[in-house]
Length: 263
Image (cartoon, rainbow, N blue to C red; front, side, top):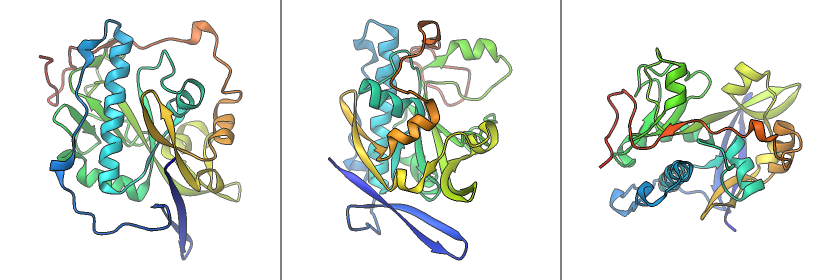
């Protein structure tokens, strides 16, 4: 099993936080885009629409993971996607999106390089790439499929003009002092939940590869205590009436400049 270790170095009152490969760090990475071979989009191979949605998300996760390794940055599965990996070895069956976590320094590097490394059919959505995107103070970026849209969301929010394709939410984590304890937390938790969910440093000292569908992605080594803090008894399924999938059109895009039409 591959893993990446988490280290922190103190400068004054601040902590610089990053991951290393095993016992060595990598510097001066040269990006050779010709080596990036992305998985094909085979959404037409599935008869069930939710299976198509999961295929689109899984393909995007594989591509984002591949790019992160090319950039020598670390991402990990977050929230319900991490829960899905642990409880289902893949997607929560009714889920229609994915979540990943990333450290601030790595996010800055991703922002500088994502557009040129991503395939044409994936849009890296930030307040800079999408002037309509107004949720950036909570979720700082999203990866979007250009062929699709969440139809229920659009019907409920007709005045929102930001890109609405199938998404991976990107949660950016910073060092933070919470009740006197040093931890990692993202803006969504700081601004909307009263810091309900966060990582103690020891919970994310390592990130380990974990099975997710037919692939492996990183999750923090302390996932059990983190998931219990976030969801309680996370291995227990919610009531059936709460297992709701968002209606998603995988073949017709939203109304936005950064879209493509399915062949």
